[in-house]
Length: 188
Image 1 (cartoon, rainbow, N blue to C red):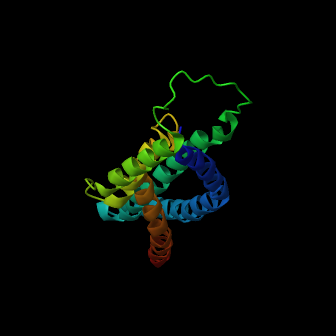
Image 2: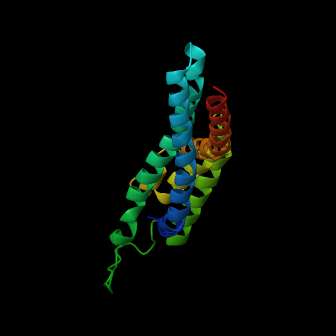
């Protein structure tokens, strides 16, 4: 593993630990209004006439999708980064016998090659949505030495980012939907 991969394996778990509580707060802030909206929508649909009365409940079901995806992705990221700090390799003093006077690749050259390959990978943008995120993820995987060294980069980060944006949008929409549905229920 290169020094870049080691830095990634130290920085990413720390960031995940720092973001643990804000992530839980965000999911709670999204879950409560959507749950209330779903209950109000269920009540409105059960007491209403026709299929249109079920639209608030259906809309609450649509809003819960990004929140559920974010919760699943967050939990998987927590599990994947939880034990990274436990797998550090500690080496002691060793005697090295050199058979060839010229080393095949110096550590500095190996690191430069890994960074150059990662930069080249970052320049290729093939994805249709969030192309820079996808390119950065591929570059990070290459710099870290693959998914074995960076298991947190296995999942597509574009889906996680889209779920985060969807969750942030779902909060005000669920609050607005709850208010409108409550007014409609009171108007009956």
